[in-house]
Length: 80
Image 1 (cartoon, one colour):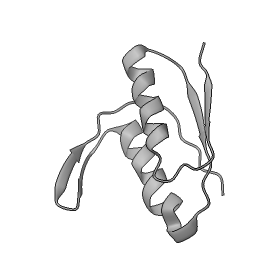
Image 2: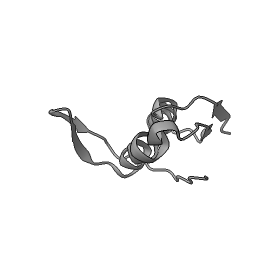
Image 3: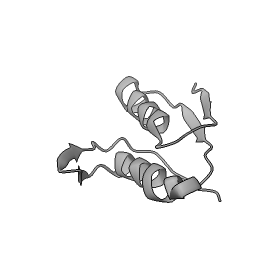
Image 4: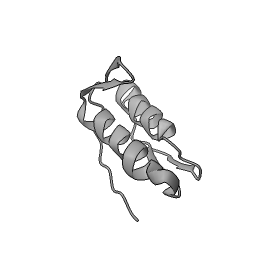
């Protein structure tokens, strides 16, 4: 049913967010694997928190801009 998407240069986790949104919108079950070294703590400070917000659905403010994340559902596992 679902496909696997691999991103070896995940950065801020944009591809993960897109996959979650597509799953919700099109009722799909795609899975993704994001790989990123933790240089400058990008995984701890950007990627993982972003995907948590997308899955749970929260409001956030970044650089004085307000962002609304609609809950997309899903699971998240973070391996170090």
